[in-house]
Amino acid sequence: MPLQLDLHTLTELYPSPGERRQFLQRALEILREDRAALQYALAGHACERAAELAHRLQGSVAFLTGEPEQAAAILRPLERAIKQGLPPDSRDIELAALDHLTTLESAMDRATHPD
View 1 (tube, helix red, strand yellow):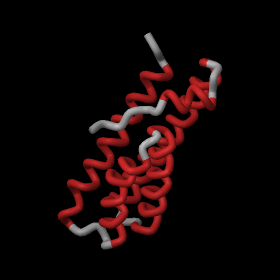
View 2 (cartoon, one colour; view 1 turned 45 degrees about the vertical axis):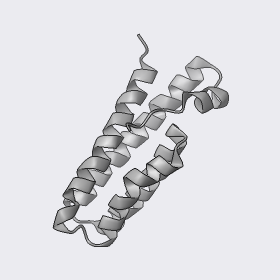
View 3 (cartoon, rainbow, N blue to C red; view 1 turned 90 degrees about the vertical axis):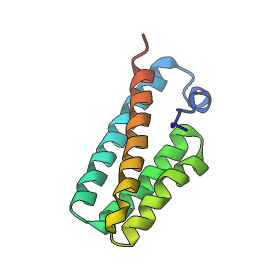
């Protein structure tokens, strides 16, 4: 199931549409920066840095979606693969996690630019 924003909680935390949009824009910037840094760390087999980023992203995704179990299901396998030194068969795990992150970024982008 694709990651969805927890707009209910975000609306409770940021009742003003402008404040909510501002929060989402900043959160989107951070998520994109962290995903790009993760991709760079993975490509360079910088496993310690990649593990830190995967863990950080898991927390961000859990907060933004309100689904900590789903965030863990997506990013923990990547963390495990990183801790194992990124074995060759872990590429599919990497791609799946990155795809989920990109999907969440798209949802956040749509939420900050409503029609």
